[in-house]
Length: 436
Ligand SMILES: Nc1ncnc2c1ncn2[C@@H]1O[C@H](COP(=O)(O)OP(=O)(O)OP(=O)(O)O)[C@@H](O)[C@H]1O
Ligand SMILES: [Mg+2]
Image (cartoon, rainbow, N blue to C red; front, side, top):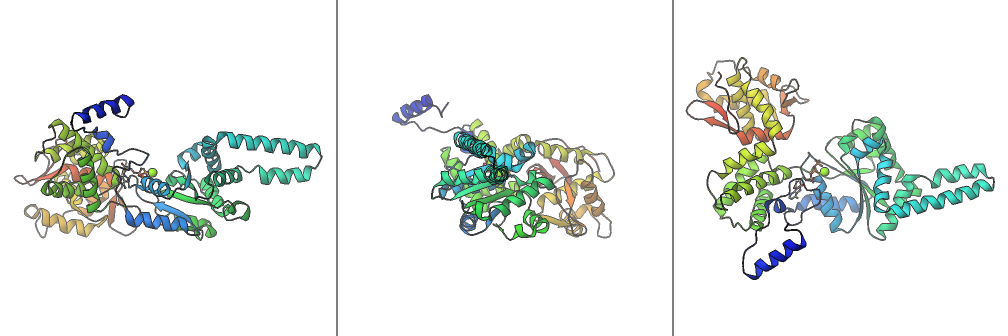
C-alpha cells in the first residue's frame, strides 16, 4: 500500500504532523529482488572498478561467483551507472528454447518488437523481389547473410544504444554449462562478434554464472574463445565492514539508530553465520527486522537467537532439515558425528583436511577424546559426503572436503551450540536425540 499513490498521500499527511514513518521491512531488506535496490546496495569498489575496466577493454567479460553472492546486482548497478544499453539473455530460457540465439532474439524482440518485425518484413519483401528477378544463387547468399537473427540483434542493440555502450548479458551460464550444444553455440557467438560483419556494431558480451572454471572450459574446447574473454575477480562474500554498512543502512532506514556496541555485536554475528554472502545477509536482516518489529523496535539480547531460528525456518529450511536427519541418525558414533558437525560449523576455511578437523575436534572436546583414541574422523567425513543427503563433497586433493553448498555451513553456524554441562551438541531449531 505504501508504494501506491494513496500510500504516498498518507505518508505526506503523517509527515505534516511530524510523525516518523517507518517503511515496511520488506521494502528495506530485499533478499530476492531482481532489480537493484539502490537504498541498500553496498558499494563493491574493487569489483565495480574491475568490471568497468573490463567492459572498457577490448575483450568480452566474464563474471563468476556463488549463487546469491551479488553478481547480477553488481553488473546491473555498474551498467546503469555507465549508461550502457543492456539486453539480458537468460540461459535458463535458452535451455527451454534449445537455442541461445533464440533467447537473445526473444529478449531483443521483447524490448523492440516493432523494429524487429518491421525489419523482417522488409527482408521478406526484398527477398521476394530478388526471387522474382530469378537470381537464385544471389538470393541464397542474401538470405544467409541478412536473415541471420543474431546479426539483426546486434544491429538493433547498436541502433538503440546510439553512442553509448551496448552490452549483451548472458546470465546464469551454469544452466547451459553441461550442454555441449549450447556451450558450442556460445563459443561461436563469442567468435562471431569479432567478425567484421558483427564487430562493426561493437556489442560487448558479459557472461555471468556460477561455475568458476567456465573460462578454462571454453578455452579447452575452443582455444580461440579463451583469448577473447577476460574474467574479473570472483564475486565472493561481502567483507565484514560491508556487512556492517548494510546493517547500519538498513536499520537506519527502519528508523532504528544502533549504538556502536549493538552494531559491533550484530556485525560479528551476521558476518559469522552468513559468511558475508549478500543474499543471506539480507535474508537474515529481514528476519531480524521482523523480530524487532514484534518487540516494538526495542532491542533485547535474545533477539539474535530468535532471528537465527526464523532464518533457519525461512531461508535455510532445506539445509537445516538435512542436518537434522544426520544429527538424529541412530547409528554408531552419532555423538561423535555431531561433534564433527560442530567443529565444521566453526571452521573458517572453505576446504578442510581430515587432519585439521581431527585436531580441532581434540581441542574442542578435550574431555571426551583421549590422546591415543582413534576418532574415525575420516570415516565420518566420508559418510557425510555420500548419498542423496550428502552435505559435503570431496575435493580434488586427497582427504579434503568442502560443503556441497554454503547453505549447509550457514545452517550449522546458525543452529548448533555446545551444551557446556553435557558436552553434547544441540540444535536451536529442533531437538536432537540423546545419542552417544
Ligand atoms: N551489493 C549489494 N548490496 C546489498 N545487497 C546485495 C548486493 N548484491 C546483492 N545483494 C543481495 O543479494 C541478493 C542476490 O543478489 P544477486 O541476484 O545479484 O545474486 P547472484 O549472484 O546473481 O545470484 P544467482 O547466481 O542465484 O543469480 C539481491 O537480491 C540482494 O538482496
Ligand atoms: Mg544472478
